[in-house]
Image 1 (cartoon, rainbow, N blue to C red):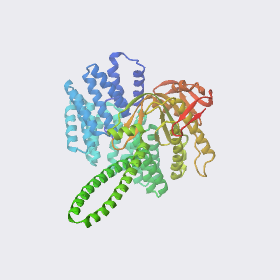
Image 2: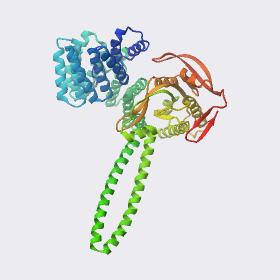
Image 3: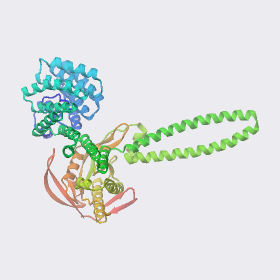
Length: 602
């Protein structure tokens, strides 16, 4: 099921990328800046990028006193938060947008806001409010904008579909579909076909469902809007599974997985793994079902160490309860002393014995508390840098930092997907764990900071959360140590263990670093430097360390580098790249190891 967007022009990554190039190269007139930022925010399918450009738009709109620009910024921030699943923030920005559009008196835009608000209320489970806002939108748009009128009808039908009322949904889809066909809006026709197919699927009319969904997929492929196709393919898999046509069911689920992986959409990848697990379970292949279910869980939780953070919180709560109990027991003990003294010396002697035992208990309890505190601190340091963990414990929150010079490294195992399909899941997980544990030791040895693992990719950085001298040199040497470990492991691997080749990419520049989440913490970094480092890795080769021009300038006097030429980098244009060969120009380069207490001489 898909709610249609508020903008007449649908989100399109290719258009968004071309607009971003215009913005970054400043190839526009000053008076066109507000409109350009509006277009980038509206057409970008990545909600995080939409938020970034919406903030830029909001800043410029306030500078130019543009009410419409402020309205558009609030609108796109609401859209982005809805896409991220943060419905409360989405609703907050939508109502801010309503206040601004009310100042302009634009009925058409106001009706579109009604549609957006209705969709959020539906997500929050408030049917009454959702229906009220949709009918307000439909009534307002009836004589104002025929396409937006049809969009509101389509979205209301989609809500009925979510409430398992396919007959009501089909009546509304028929009305909106006629208008979309009259207007010739290809993308909206595709959504209408797909939603109609989902309604027929709910009614058990599989032939009609398949025909409509297939037609929607063909149209969406032609216009290059691939993300909704993954959901439609999953529904097609369900249709064939109900017919016991397992080959077709598997084919559609695998297509959904490959497309989701190509697009890099995390929720859809996770759902595709889950669907394949269900299919294997239904067809009697429990080992394969378990493998894909583990992939589903592993992908979903790859960034955050949920269990460790939860244990930290539980230990904090347990310690607080224990301390309260100890204070209460002390008060009771003091009362007993007073009563015992007044009654008899014999009772005083008995109490003294009891007090000795109690003091022993308290000492043992305090030792347990101290042990648990140390354990909690170690768990927290496994998730966050020491400085960041201290700030979190002291203030309950962490301020984001802008760091001007940080070196970022990405690694990636080649043909990992192929190995995962033919290797026992437990052996694969243990093997990857062995590699990443060794990488952690190397990173710690050079005073660098592990950021996270993403599937089979490993990410670390140097120069944060506090500045680090020669972080680029240390990162390159760490990369050589990592490569050496991979080569040694491949040469001496156990029987049945997969053989991995690895490529490395490194870039240096400014980043923003901070902690995301309220209950499940994760230390992360953002910025153009991170994106370029990832692209250095993708453009590297097996067994090679690929570095950018900025990193090359910092290490060229110490490492022999091979110039590769200029390569096209997405969103950056042509960039110079170098392979580090591992031959050192100087013999006196000292890279300090903070964990080993010694210098590594090169």
